[in-house]
Image (cartoon, rainbow over all chains, first blue to last red; front, side, top):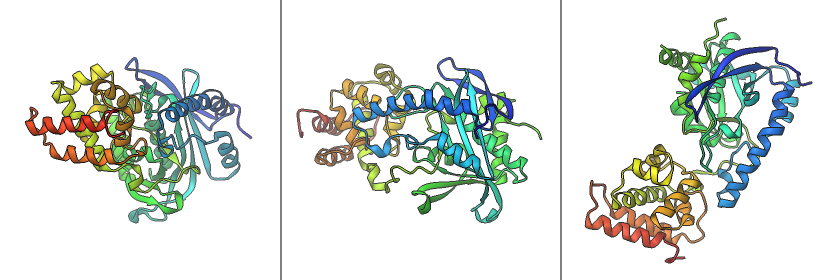
Length: 217
Length: 158
């Protein structure tokens, strides 16, 4: 059953792209019924609008947002019932801005940490109005994916996995994980629809967390 | 446990996402195509070369063109210099209007749409290959630009 309220809330922030300023936000653990309702009421209609524009412009289907048919309620209900999963959401201005589900029973693949426990980010998505899309337009808030990734690292540390995380990137995001986050690219995974698999070692995770702290000073 | 993801950390790191889409997870709809299906680097190079030549032919800086087209400077830089960059449909629409060429053909060159007639793509690549990057347009570059405009206009080569 989906919880009606979060078990824990921590204070975070997002960047309002139009104003160029920070806005307060909350990190909820786990995903709640309110987050799933936001997906149904706010995310889906916005995604449908974007798809209509892409369709009108004749953009190739494989370039449409790959998560367009994700059903977060279904995903959450299935994974919530399975042991070894954690979920989280980012809420700002009263609306869910991003969600993540992590698998805690996944083993690392990089040779130096092969078979060791890690946090595997099974699904990560930001609200459609916060994405750079092929239809142009400025994202409303920036920083959601970065903070969810940072929180996945913290969860990994909390569980004794030393910051090891991994994920299969959506095609549009390969550059972000490789070049912006400094994750190791282990190449296209034939077992996962050829999505590229990225992983972080404890050293990479520490470097990622430190970057935000250094810039902050 | 110390919470290192503070509001200050989030704001310091938010810039990493600018110009990027962030998502992860297995999707079960459209398989990721092999490299060739995503539009060739050559055709995107031709698109970038065309934008660069057409811009310089009008004596415009990237900033000025971005302002005229009401698009992001970074987007224009990426179109001109990064053959892997997928431009926005809106950007191509704006550029097609300014340079007087077909938006549909620019989208075909970019790989956003699959061109029905690939002849113009081959021709555009050929013209782009004739030009070289210098501060001012040489006669040869001007000829290459004229050729690209002819190939990418609606009237010719449909």
